[in-house]
Length: 382
Image 1 (cartoon, rainbow, N blue to C red):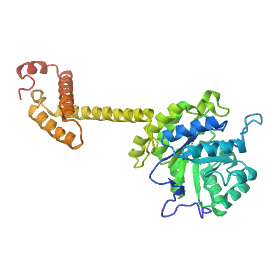
Image 2 (image 1 turned 120 degrees about the horizontal axis):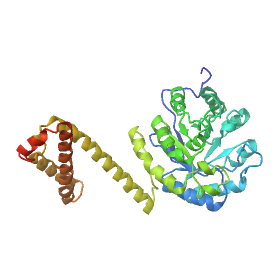
Image 3 (image 1 turned 120 degrees about the vertical axis):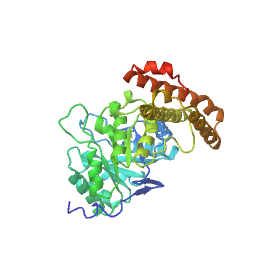
Image 4 (image 1 turned 180 degrees about the vertical axis):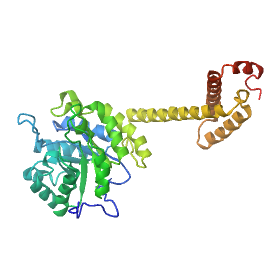
């Protein structure tokens, strides 16, 4: 890695700031949109979905390098105008892919971020031209590229004068046919060990299947990714490109609602939902998240209760004095949090009763002879 003169690891990690959006900071940045721009309505709907989910950047392909010459190649300038207008409507940034010098020249002054796709990762002349621009670049890893080749491709852009490079892991070609590509999450960690540049992950192209995208997205955040590039389409069944790997709007918003917990677990931040307006769907998603955390915490409490029960004698399972002390403490806390104290008085006796029954059953399962002792020492006698 001796040639990583500019992309190599520095004492501090780089962040890329684009119109108030920082990639590489503490916040996980969500980028979403269709693989290919098809119409103004499609892009307006996609932009609204991305905004609702808390995304900051709208993606959409207007030049499509396709394996088959007969596949949809993109709308070009017409599609670019749809993309830019839709992003503007929702106050989002926008990103699109360039494939050659002509497409680069067309989009460079109109989009906020330029993407160089996997097929062009080692198009060195294109990398040099991108390096002469001042627009941030997302550089996707090639289909069969090593991490060293990927980082050296970034070096081409940096050496040409553009320091704003964002690395994107999008899966590599392996012998495994179950997915479109194999998502190499270890590459996120390796790239961050070797380079100061931000790293994002594209789970859509890695999986090729929408049913895996949620799990891969969460794993990417856990692995250290600074952002996600996810495909979503208003109607994936009718998409001209990559429909099977595109999330529906509902799936995209639901996934976004689940990312915050993972981000928090690795000391990162992701805020689901638009900053300007809460929709009924986004509010319900927030409620679902809170309910899930409540149940997870109750399950954790019951596990601790079980361990406490193991330390107790059967005639000590119910401790009325401690229950009263806990309820009073929680009533005081509820008042401080502006919650109705009566809510605590109604809920916690049920929780305590469930805990007591759990402890009793646990003891009797292990030692049926204690049933006789239970008759001698009724619950609550001590």
